[in-house]
Length: 84
Image (cartoon, rainbow, N blue to C red; front, top):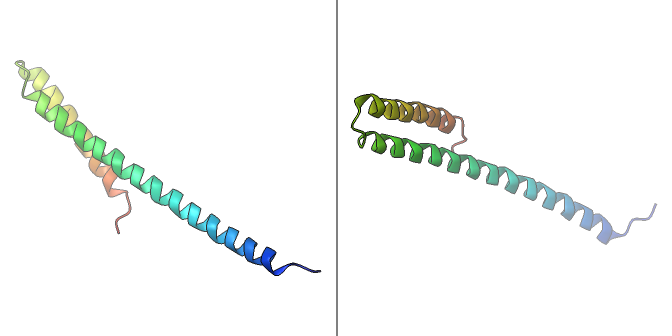
């Protein structure tokens, strides 16, 4: 059957564009994951700094303990991300 040369070329280019688009979506998801890890670490700094403002040692330790848990979660999250 007859297939115009430009039609074949356009299909090949469309496939290449779709592959690049998928690659870009994957890169965007990776960057979103890194931003989420940054938010985890910002929360750690917030709660650790907040713990020094409480007069009650119990509340300060609770805030510091929560910061430690979030830090552990952030480290686990960061360790699962791809490094290049």
